Length: 198
Image (cartoon, rainbow, N blue to C red; front, side, top):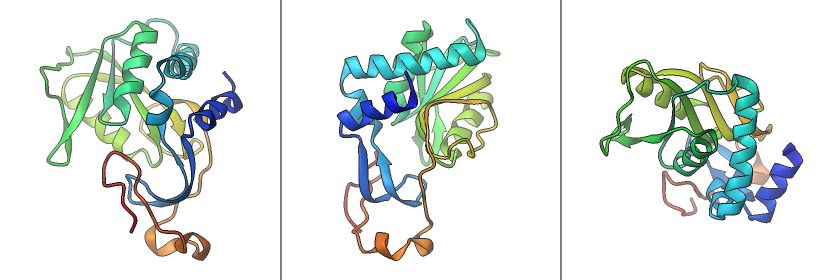
C-alpha cells in the first residue's frame, strides 16, 4: 500500500479532518487524522494494519518480536490488529493517575522483544512514556510502529519507528496559532479530552 493509497483510506473513512484541533499533546493543528474512524471498518482495519505489518516485517525481518504492546486508548485497536497480522500476542498499557501501567493481569515476560504500536505519533511523548513503562516491566523494546507519523520522521521515540503514513502536518503552541486558524473554534476530537470547542 502506497502512502497515497493509505491516505485514500483515511479520506474514504472521513478520518482526514480540517479545522482547528487541540491535539493530545496540547498543540494546535489545522489537520486531524481520526484513526478510530479508519479502524471502525474491520475490512479497512485489516488492509491498513496489514500494510503496516508488511512494512514492519520489511524493516525488522520475520520473527523479530515476541509481543506487541500499545498505549491506550488510541493504540489498542491498531496494536491488536498489527499483532494479529504478525501472529503475536497483544497487550496494552493504560494511564492511571497520568502514568502508563499494566492492568487486567497483563504481564511482559522478562527479556521479551517488544514492538510498541501507536495510532498516531506527533511529538513522540506518549510513545516514549509507553516504552519506558515496558522497559520498567522487563521488556526490551526493539522498535515502534504507527499508522500515521505526523512529524515526518522528526519525532524521536528512542527506537526505530515504522509508519504507514508520514506527513508534515503543522502544529502550534497556543501562543503561536496563526490568526486565520485562531478565528476557528478549537475542538479536541481525541480520546483524552472532551469533544468541545474552546
